[in-house]
Image (tube, rainbow, N blue to C red):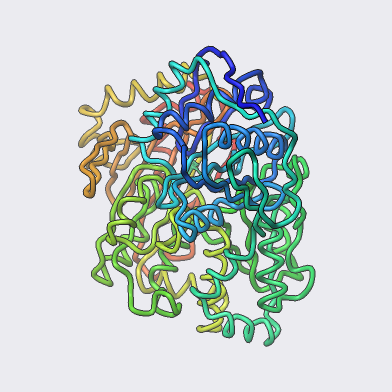
Length: 543
Ligand code: VG1
Ligand code: CO
């Protein structure tokens, strides 16, 4: 087998965003595009000679082809071993676990997460480091620098490798080990949770629906919920991963998981509903007639953590991304834990987890996880809920009511304006930034703005700083508005407006969020002129 040195030219715009490099699939399929980026990863991390890597993806269109390219390029650059999920499938948290369990030097995850997949949709590549987590800024910036001078790449000339069954083969001098994608992940979940208690819950007649959204979690969910825990056959739906996710967005929220929402609010609703995203790191939790906001979900998990075997001795601390509601802070305050506030994106939790400062982390975008891996973990969150319910035997709605009664409620919503003209979105952000001093102590649609600033994060572990992480306005009555531009989109700009208002009056804990948030929504419009600038009457997605 020959190692080819292929001449290429640097390709513009290969800058990793919130979570890896995401582009339209046809862009990734352009000549040299994927190869340039993979070579830049190798160059950015100082080569892969003698290293062990993990490889897998969410099964979207081009996953299989891209995996073969990565294998040939790892072999050409002298990797000692690549551990790859069968059929090149691995959920993101399962990949994180494998990197840690096998003490690999890093891993490549082929995924654009919750973005749709298919020949005309999105593809992505993410590099994770030896701790199992997404590469921090210091690493992604080296990778990006390498893309700017990429004039050659190395690739082995060979036939495709058969990835359809577990076992070891050799590709040039590299060992390729194909593993069952589910096995080690399921074993880890059994170590964390009380499977016996959850099994007893199902035996008592408890019913569940898990919507895998035709994405990677299907096989994991079937193996865990139906086979290991005894949920009725058919509890897991849309369980076969498909290259185009059945034509939908594999994004677990009330909009894209509407079928599940309808079922959970219908006459024959099961006791518990959940869904996950393309690569299995997000989760949606919904009870009978009760959707749980992700920001509330992480607060409930933290408040009930000692019911779970792995966390029975309590938590070290907790962390949330800045735009996530402060429901988690309320729990931390009561239980005397530090609650860290980080920029959006899981990579910012890595140092806090590695340093033993926090046990549970969460993001408002349906991401929750703990120190068991270094990624957010959708099925972990679902199992956490099931384990809580198995212990308390309350319904989801009762759990939420009791939680709000005890801690107060942070009404919360996120409004997304998608595919907005990039210049208009930048303009809105720039003008807000310029207006920050005059916004302080001013009135916005009847609410006082007490603080107005742009979030920058100082990592307490390595001392690094991340600037420009969202504009935030703190309002009277514990209200808050955050404006940010998405870093995961592939066309135009997505403006995210995060809206929050706290309520501790026991008489006012069950309002509709739109109602409770109406003055905050009006304030956001008054301050930013969203309708005018985006030309939209309403957000495209409200979660
Ligand atoms: C979004 C979410 C963020 C999440 C990121 C990756 O980023 O807001 O909380 O960590 O997606 O999640 P952005 O920059 O578009 O707001 V995933 O499941 O897409 O890897
Ligand atoms: Co994801």
